[in-house]
Image (cartoon, rainbow, N blue to C red; front, side, top):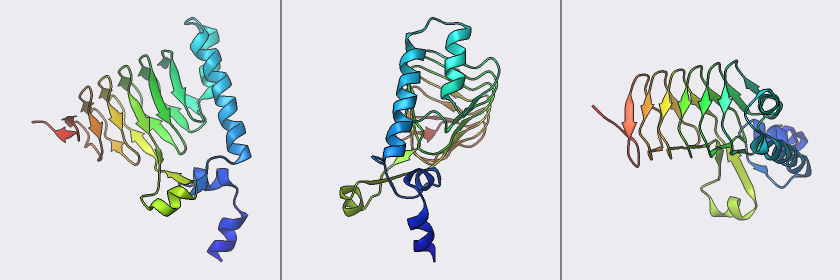
Length: 187
């Protein structure tokens, strides 16, 4: 029965559920083309209401006073949800094949990369062109230093600090400070 349900699902539905899917599906390619067009517009615009409107068209949701400084890059945009007063500095990348949630008041430094996109560990599945995703959740009032990388499936608790250049491979507790590669808790 499960195989029948999987066969009936579109590649987009599989992607959104975090299941294995084929990224070169026509519907997904069309969605990426839409996000690319919106990113190009947004990244070329000066700060102001027009750029804010394009950002809101690109993203799944964005709270009041949220700022995304260009250039900004993502896969789809519609899986990114930002709370109130979120700030993303220049050159951030969010691979949003599944949901990426960023809480109120979170500040993200330049060149931070947030990866919800993942790939199977089995080489045969990768050769078959399959990929998947695992949601990323970043809490409220988090500070992520420039150049940090957040890997698929990670949850960062409220009020946490992530040091510049860190590679976050595991969940970060609320209020914790982590740094390094892989990121480890500091005293």
